Image 1 (cartoon, one colour):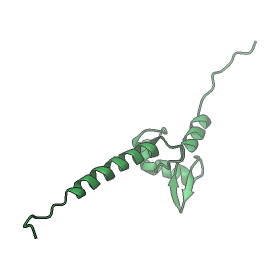
Image 2 (cartoon, rainbow, N blue to C red):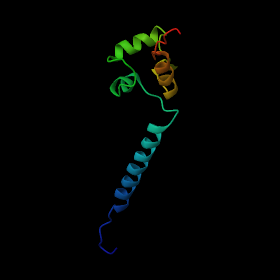
Image 3 (cartoon, rainbow, N blue to C red):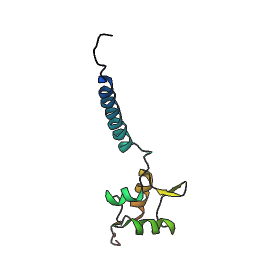
Image 4 (cartoon, rainbow, N blue to C red):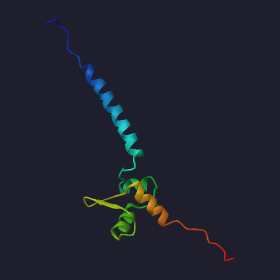
Length: 97
């Protein structure tokens, strides 16, 4: 034995690598077309015109909003949000000629 105490420097490097990969994974997931959003995220980010998670879920239960039931949980894809935005869009009134 050399009398030198073993250090664990490799753990801090591992933590940095894991944190960097988690940040990269999160950035990819945020921009991903297949990312599933919870009703809480949709309301927090104001992606649909609902201010309450309860009202949003109620509309989903009534099947009035495009959504997915993944394992019994309500989720939204970007395509669902696009469909809902297109559904509620108001077209301008054209005057008859």
